[in-house]
Length: 177
Image 1 (cartoon, rainbow, N blue to C red):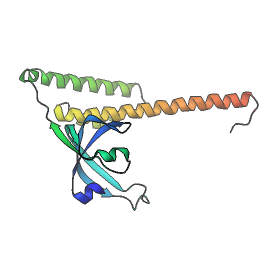
Image 2: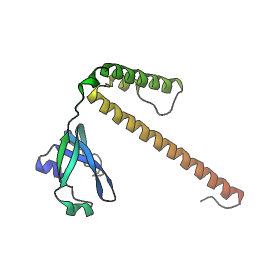
Image 3: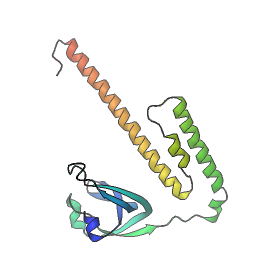
Image 4: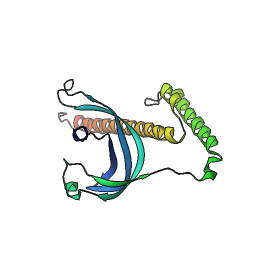
């Protein structure tokens, strides 16, 4: 709501730990906002699509008093970090992009041949780009993939623990809760 009220379409996100902000973050820009509160009984207010725009470095926090609260946004003065390549980096850039594409395609092919439960959608992979801007989308998809793998592994481990505990209850003649 706050971003809508002030009319801003840009905001930054950064990692936090124990109410401390990372020095670097990502500038995001809102592409579209859809009010979905009626469809979700106010469980979810908005469905927001956004684009990652730039990397940023926090120079100064303008309202440090809100760091100890959970309900206020931190406002900061930031520096936008532009990716600048040394001219010599461009000599083999196209080769690196081709190698990244080939490696990713091979990975997806292996996933499908092994019938992995969690795998990349082949149609989405065909649309990926490995140039400077496309690489960030690819990295985002990779991160989402790794999160799904982590979730599946946690769930499988939890099931193993439940089975062990259940077996123990049964073997000791106790009622399984």
